[in-house]
Image 1 (tube, one colour):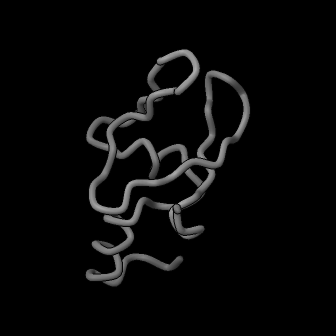
Image 2 (tube, helix red, strand yellow; image 1 turned 90 degrees about the vertical axis):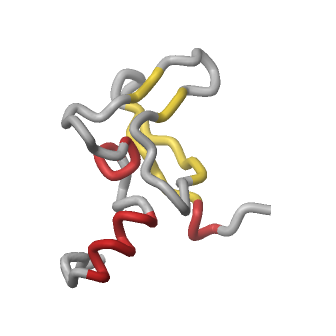
Image 3 (cartoon, one colour; image 1 turned 30 degrees about the horizontal axis):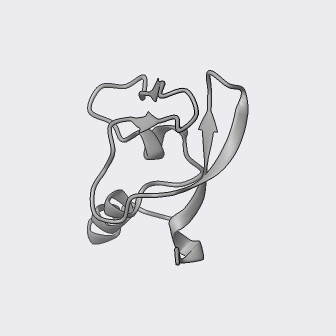
Amino acid sequence: MVHSDRIKKIELSNLGHVKSVEWPMNACQIYYKYKNCGGLLVPKKQNFCAFCFYGEDLCQPEQIERRRTNEYKG
């Protein structure tokens, strides 16, 4: 069973729609692999998490780091 706080929306830019997916909880992910076609969603900025770049919020590890440094307002 997946907890609802782990399900977030990510914009699948090359497909033109938004999908709810399970987000990583312990590490940033530099790409998201489409389940149907196997294509990769890669952030446009180097060294950036795909979920932070295309998602509705920052990934869990980035939220934790920004809370630690008082930079997260979510």
